[in-house]
Length: 369
Ligand code: GLY
Image 1 (tube, rainbow, N blue to C red):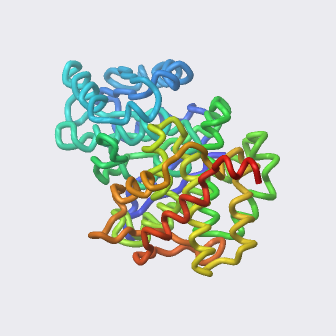
Image 2 (image 1 turned 60 degrees about the horizontal axis):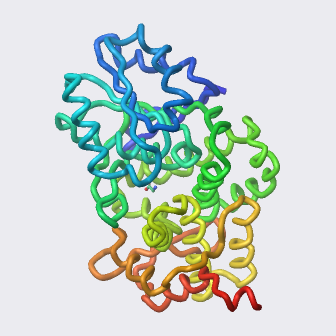
Image 3 (image 1 turned 180 degrees about the horizontal axis):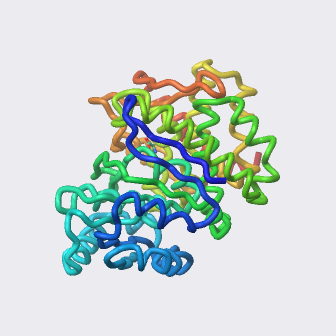
């Protein structure tokens, strides 16, 4: 396949995303950054380490000064300042200098945490994203958002910090467990909903191949998703405006994620948040009732939830207010005008958000109905 996409800031090229089906070109790509004179630290999680860390070390060990691996327990609960501190300690003990390089090998948690360490260790060291989950390949590894959670606040501490390169080996998607894979599909569907009705249709038409994880379909799906993200982040890298559209489904989604203490996966919560936001769009007469039900029901064949039991809607409403997407007292809420077109609304009321949350709340009466 060997496709490339360049992320720019304005017209200035900043870094490339490379699409491959293996890791065979990783050394060649990294040699462009003079790794012969650098120490490399592969930062990964306990799960991904078992799959790919040895292979990466084997491929790079003769090309750089030294390569070390640091891993931490997998899952969102590791995305915090304790993990950051442990990585700083490891880098200090191993005398990593500013000219050395970090490689983030894993999903969104690994990429966001490593990126934040790279942005802050010695006031900034180079890093490369090697995303291995669908969610990281289509979203979190692209666009330079790095950071960790702080107490109950998601992604509250972080920096915009660009990687030198994003190297995607699409065959890593084959080793994802089903739940992780479909969690990534929520972000893919989000691109269709906010940016492209034809991509949304394409996803539905290619549902079988997507379930089968057909490599050619995955390549097209990931590449197109990154193209949508590129269109947005090239123009608005630091979320002064349009980038906020990417938060469709995330305001209520993040609140559910926190409420459930990260028992649900990020994409599962995003799917719930998208359903709630689509419902709110219908209730404002922005989209038709049929459109709402179609959007809602289309998450089901991709194994994503459209309702949730055992929640306290008022508490979720309270948590949405502690999300970062606030401007003063106003929440920046993303609503749909139609499939393929989203906009930022700052007039959404608490009652509307509560109605959205109640729509995804599955109660005992729903069983009886
Ligand atoms: N994941 C949303 C963004 O990168 O802006």
